[in-house]
Length: 124
Image (tube, rainbow, N blue to C red; front, side, top):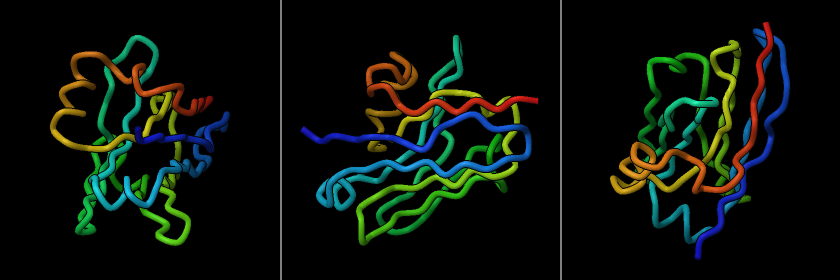
């Protein structure tokens, strides 16, 4: 079973930056496109970015221009650099493989089934 472990969350003020990390196996990154999801309390599990194995990246309108997804191919770590953070970015962030099934699961079940994630809190 593939294990994904997120880290790097914390509490910052508006305008601050954080870098989230997602560790997984070489096999995971070779096999799957990868995405970052987030879920605010009471909110939906929102796909905010993905990186395809061919290198193509995508960002939701809410984070485009502020966040950047990348893959450290030496350490097999998926990164999410978050700049100019805003209070509306407050959420628990999860990395996940990004097949259609994962997107459907996010919509149906939320992000909670993917583990604890890493909490980002942005204060005004």
